[in-house]
Image (cartoon, rainbow, N blue to C red):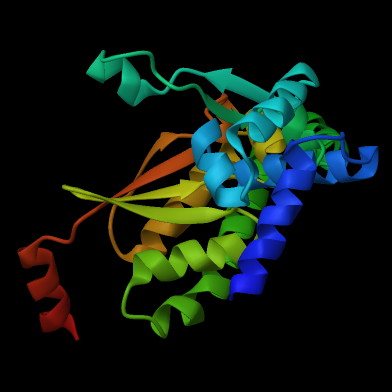
Length: 242
């Protein structure tokens, strides 16, 4: 264990102190920083440094370059605006241009195809496609959720495997399902029916009404879906039905 710690410390020192690392290593480190934000959502420099094992000075240099390149955006955290104490730490999130560098290579083709369908046959074909896609998600996720005691956690794990980088955050009134990446964000921005059908599928999978609070397609940093806690009466009704 000691050797492992020493090796990690040596790697960090090489990347962030003294002589500049090779450009290839610099680029790979920036890709790791961007990927970490993509998968974990908006993050501060301190959180990223801890997560990736880099010094604060080293992480800030990479963040500045990623912001300058248009891959990331820097914003003030909403919680800091409420607290009003001290100087709030900026959080960094993936920009639209940054997302394009990952899994959006076929977006233009998909948008063009759906626009063609709409022009030739009307909106109903796009709606039917959105519902078919949502049903496919539901069909694949149903057996996965059936094997787990916590459906919310199981759904987040399933969505992560599908490229959504999803996490669950507990709140007093329920859970928030956060999808830190959306493989179809640019397409959904043009065709909201995709998001609407997906939300309905999530509701059916969890057996409760869910509410979308934010979406990447509408310019938010994360897709956030609120999942209310099951009431006692609802739980009792389910038991009676079974």
